[in-house]
Length: 281
Image (cartoon, rainbow, N blue to C red):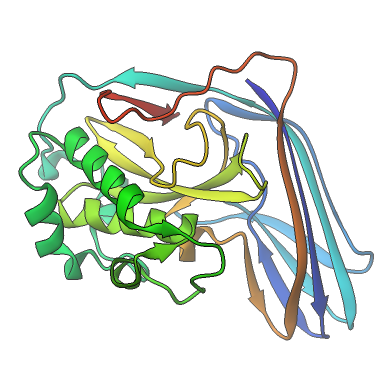
């Protein structure tokens, strides 16, 4: 499918400040950026580089003067994702996991899986396989955590979300990741542009490593799972933040869009009774 994505970000910046942007669509074997532009206020020095080990496309901005900073990104992207059945899956063998997957078993800044071990195993450990476990915990988050804009901040962790039972997509994703890791299922943060999200914004969800695939799950149920343009993955939001700010910088506004171009779209939404999942290759 072909999507057109756009992002406009505005900040009030004092001199000698920097921003690390993470809003460029990824180039992967099955997601190709056809064309793109990134425009920033005149006089701001910019440099693109890849994060390690995730390979996210980052842009550093160096601002030397007091100004209102305007950032405009647009891209046309060919995106392919696969909807796959998981009726029969193999048991996870930790010793045979690829080295780049192992890190997603460990607790991280926002996903304290070590603190949620008892909760996760008491509630979901009895499920017959990893797909059932992740489906069950995703459904539990959807039913028990209220989606409330502005209810959390940059310090909120998965452990906080369990206690407060409220959050936004970032918090839903962190809790899903933490519960997966507590069940010894590798899981990672996924952020992107989301088709049919209302109101339009960047959207966070999570991927669980099941039977050799990174399968996408979204406990908010706000979007079709096959309607994402991937921006970044990581251990949690610390690895995949849209913008990391260094200096005297105040956020003013953002405007995000993700539109389908010239194709029909059949939305795939996770059915609690279905053993199918979406893979972004």
